[in-house]
Length: 254
Image (cartoon, one colour):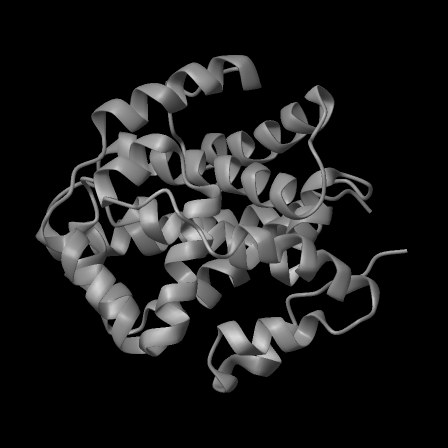
């Protein structure tokens, strides 16, 4: 069977581990709040009303692409595209192409950042593999002006950080919604997790302080994985209502 992402790919390793996925979306939730196109998700109301539900919905789509056959993955991408087209028809406007690119770029960047935080540094071949997987998603969605390789992407990504982010009322409201749904302790943990993976530009715009009490705990968490008590940490950081959905994020391949 032909897969969209071949077995053995580092992308499967990233998207088959719940702890890495949670850090991917911790970082993305911070940066997306600064995106100049975030008003599109306010138009549907889904992100501010249920940010955690939106997280798991997005994870679901990403994993269908990563772990499915080629045909099934392409159908999933087409479905995602059709959903966005429906939103455009309702709003009678067009989502900017740069906004689609920015989301792809976030998936690439935070997949690498989270993997390197919790596992190890990626080699050049793995970085290129990661890039090619998500850039193929972009091509399937009909996006143009996408970089051809990881090196070009690094340059394009930097341009995005310098031109497509702004702190707005949507930014402030989204963080209020994160706090509302996570409560005080888990919200503080989210902020500390975000500090570990977001780029300097995002830290500055969000006013993050340099001190991070979570960084020393990363090594402790890595040890907890070796003695199989890492599930306690995950349940501590996310509401109990999501316990089963968090466990289901782990996919073990032989």
